[in-house]
Image (cartoon, rainbow, N blue to C red; front, side, top):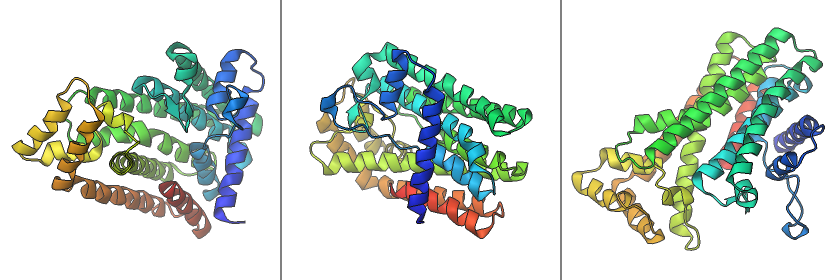
Length: 338
């Protein structure tokens, strides 16, 4: 069995566990959740439904298996962290006014912002309820309580990161340090939680859990930077694509670096874009010219690589057996290549 086949199998198991969590619920609210999870379409014209990725849940199971755990027992935790991620996605789409998610209409675009918020909040509540299913898998109550606490702390961090991200939209004095703090919370919190929950349920030591939390934070920042670079690249190279993040004045890392390290003239050129009340797609071309001149795209790539290396160094410090370490690193590599 190849690693990718193994990861696909774990994704299917996470998906099945989430279906179990939702199976007893029958109001229209849960149909909206099923749509966001990729299980249902609005109409036959939408084509066959395809479940969206389950990367946070799979990461939880990979960490559990790497630490010598029983993935069957860890499935409720994998489902829980995945549901929190989907709750965050729905709210991200509402906050950013993004009409599409995974090449389909976003939940808020179909049912309106108010019902999207209800669906997202409901998924967060279901995530917490999912963790109590650990008790049915033979997990002791004290361990289940620790899992709930870890998930709640990560959920709160993820919300704090989104607060910082939105706060930075109308500011030009955002530093690289503040960006990294935002990305660590917004993206890193749930990756840290996925790794922590999986290893915790396998009986990993507190020292190992701390190293895994660090690895998850670094990995989350790397993926956040990768997303920023992808948005810039697609906007420049594809005439039909315009980054909604950039149009919303999100401070992508190369832009933050440019504001922080550029000359007065450079910052004035950036200000010509970011002091506008409303951006036009044509504004973005001039913006990328400034970033190229300052080399901040290449510097961002370097920082991304450093964060991935740091995540793997933390994993190496745990002392997993060779098979476990290879499995975990292999999944991280697959996500970076996705």
